[in-house]
Image (cartoon, rainbow, N blue to C red):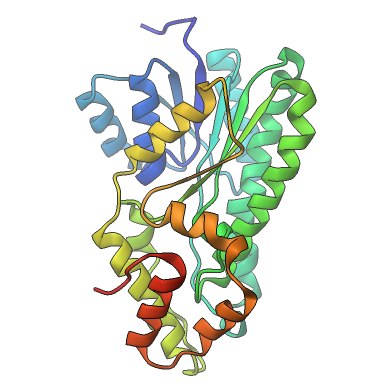
Length: 294
């Protein structure tokens, strides 16, 4: 039975990883959760895990990359629930490439999901939140939104853009009582990393860059935290009486997201010039306090 007094929370990209864990966690914390998925046919695991947890996650089919799909999906959500108290903009895609080798289409596709997709969904809920004078928007960025992760130019660019969009949004919505939260995960146990294994290397000049990028994620996956940790952070961020704008979380999150402004430009460039992988790993640890050896 649906509790009419429960906060209504929409989680985009709820089919896997952080989105699925967050949807199930918030449902367990008493939220009425609507998870958006691109295909109902692929939601069996989400529904099974929700059932195992003894909670209900309602589903709406929605593709954040498509204007019409977002419009129709949120019309269905509003008809179903009557309001949205919290929007968790989680849906996102990765993108590996150095700048020289990255097709313009990849930049456009990644931005369309990670930045414009977030904007589409946010625009769908803001009018009624603003009229009501309450609500929260949680944007899932990444530590790659604070540190230019190697050989992931389209992903990094999109997440840096989402950080800037979120900062501006927070100030825009402050007069209306709407909370904006930026959650910056490091590496979690998520299928996005298993799917994100491409390394174009079309010129052959960037072997070292791609190798070191995969080295970082191999180390991260060995120490990856459960995505439910992100769900717990989100729950705190939208309910606390002392909210912050940014919440780094997961493996490498705190170290990398908070160190960016304290890294000298010279140290950053020197890291890129190091030829030997062992020396690179040692220097990475010295700068970030993260051991990426495997």
